Length: 235
Image 1 (cartoon, helix red, strand yellow):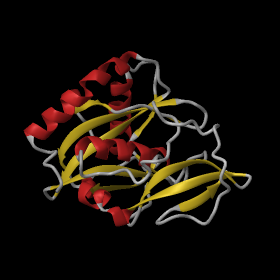
Image 2 (image 1 turned 60 degrees about the horizontal axis):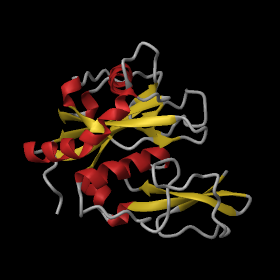
Image 3 (image 1 turned 90 degrees about the horizontal axis):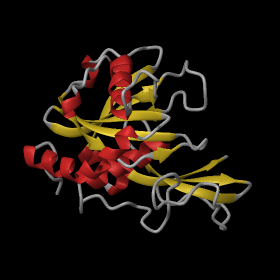
């Protein structure tokens, strides 16, 4: 059963669990993203963006959370996430709505990305006016959708016919959620729905987080056909 993570008790539980990560606010980071927990027609959901196809770089057209690079003028990673969210979506999130920081993740260039979880309240994604230079689309995925096992899978990242690492993927929404955005989604689900969300990759490691294997440590098995709901992606 999906816990009532939008209740005052659910918020307090999450804030308490994240309190120990407050020290991460002052640590240097390359980027920060906001993980917006919202209510869409009364249904708990996470808010995502589809990056503009007009952007440069390898991640154009990918699903992401709102966020971006830290600016020297930002006080810390929370201010980076809030500033970028307002710039991308026109959505002003008060700092007191921030619940805390999830575990940092690292991109292939070893840049630190800090996820910032915030409750943004009732929201209609269609009412937002995103910056068309950065965002093609805004959409929400209900937590109930993300928690259904038929919507969960994984992606094998391969190089020269061998596994490098495996990441979760969330399927059957408007767009596929994969890469670091899927890892951050998994962290959020583990916090918001303890005992309900069971990682599909419990026996495998994700790169770039504490206790997780780094992608430069290749697994020895060659890439085979994808497993259930998963994909192979060559590097």
